[in-house]
Length: 89
Image (cartoon, rainbow, N blue to C red; front, side, top):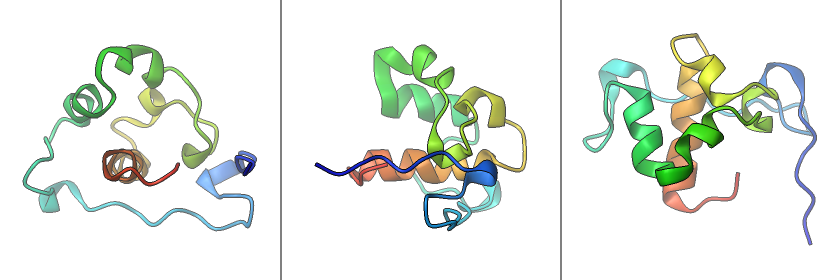
């Protein structure tokens, strides 16, 4: 059973490596919305409101909602891409 990495400041994983920045808003994938909250609802579904308020290690223990509209929104888009692709986060 694998352990989930401990949250680190700045979005770094347990090895101190930060996830790669996601695509800039001008380079969205065809199925991505300019409004990241729409993408959250599409990817997460009925539980999206609770998910938005739950801290995530990928975002440096911040909540997804708290990074919307900040420089870390790209990390949120990258996290959603991983979830959509079925890659463990």
